[in-house]
Amino acid sequence: MKYLVIGVVAIIIVAAVGVFLFQGDDDGDGEGGVIVQKGSDTLLELCQIWAEEYMAENSAVEVEVSGGGSSTGITALINGQVDVAQASRQIKSSEIESAQAAGFTPVEFKVAIDGIAVIVHTSNDIGVLTVEQLRGIYNGTITNWNQVGGANEDITLYGRQSTSGTYEFFWEHVLQKENYSQDMNMLSGNSAIVAGVQGDEGGIGYVGIGYASASGINVLDLKKNSTSEAYSPLDADAVQSGQYDLSRYLYIYTDGTPTDQVSRWLSWILDADLGQQVAVDVGFYPLSAEVIAEERAKLG
Image (cartoon, rainbow, N blue to C red; front, top):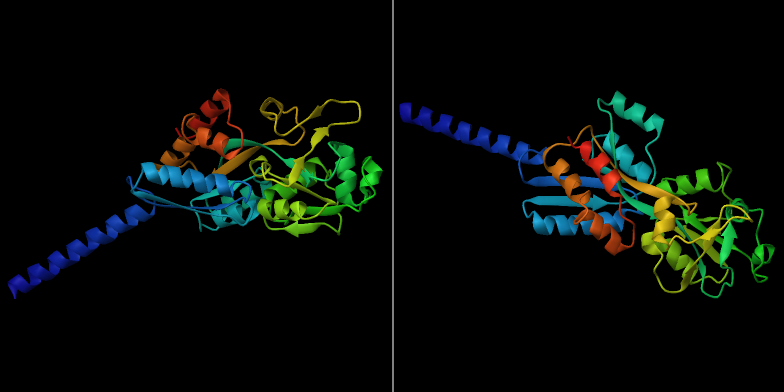
């Protein structure tokens, strides 16, 4: 009986240690474990490549990345369903309030720079639009390319779904919070918009710069107004300086100050020679040294 009791106690201790180690691996302690990330489609391909490169260097860590839109990712973070949310817009005050009601304050990290590219079919002779003309096209007051100096061709609008950060950024900065045209085709991702424009001579769309190198499309220059200089999202200096009118930061949000594996993951992304170089390779633009220093300081 004495040996039986000792054996049972030993089994309980081993099981308890196993549960402790499993939970520690699950919640981010130690070197290994799983990081679950969700959000922006604009950032999806970049984050997936980041994850592949990071896991190749850190075999004990698994980074699971999915899309669905910036709003979807931030909501998942608030609900405790993910460790990290990627977003192509800044978090809203209402979302911060919801997170605080859930017991934490999200921490924002700038992770790359994007210039939203306005794209048209290669047969379209238009090379430059003003922001005002772009607004008219997307609010439905301009419906034919001949109204902006192009051919007599009806304009077909392609844009993102309402959960997209790019949808909201474009709505704020181009439409000035007016309604999108009801005729806009609302698509779930950048690749779908590219495909739509590739097959439509009257088509126009907006995508993250990482998707603007596809064949079958032209990337338009933008002017703030009719008398200002035109800039291209393909011009790194114009995007990084903000001269290109649709320049923006891309973000990652965490559940409070990140620790352990999530902190190491973000530190790798913010390394100029590692994650930032991958961003350049994918087609986005890197953070400046000053911004990298500011973001890394948030890691403690």
